[in-house]
Length: 274
Image (tube, rainbow, N blue to C red):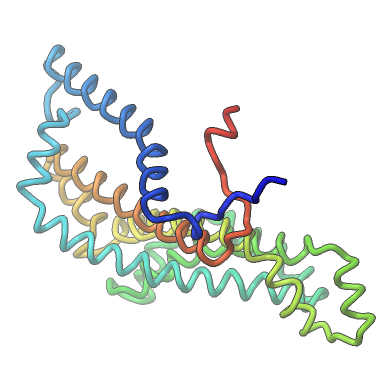
């Protein structure tokens, strides 16, 4: 009889590090090849920097503007963090209310879907008009963009419980609230973490959109300012910082998933390809 494979949290730190390096190697190799090809194309065809900068020009812009980009990244990170936390709370609350109060849920669910189809870019100027240019409109925009995947995935998890478990709990006199707390919510945690991973990426997008609409700081403001100056290398430098920031937030959520719900199935690109 073979032993069950260890979970990610049970593996030694050196094994986790080696696995992380081996998993990242293909992506790093492909990225290096793309960068080299990009640099060669710019040099061979003499593409102007304001049209498409070479990777070396982008790196130079990163080095020259790292202080401003670091300050902007900090402002954007604060917006993303607060907006993501609130969107998670709102999404969880919406899903629980829909399942706990069925009639009210049937009435409110179509309205939530309808609201989700409203272009969020159109809401950004309205929020700025209502709440000014401070943190509040960016956080609110992040919430309306990012709460939906949390609510949908949490709702799927709450409703996918085996009916026999619910019947068993009812047979021993458990109330609907206790069934929700003891059965439905624990069962929905893997679905919730999947929704949170989508929500964190939407949160970064929401922060940048909010800063485009009106801000005096943040990476979105840097991108918008650089575009007015035709400083394309700075635009690409800010985009790289946005991408790294979003990637960091995503993996924080993924690591949290591995620790909090280690029994949940994880996507393995190698197995998926096989």
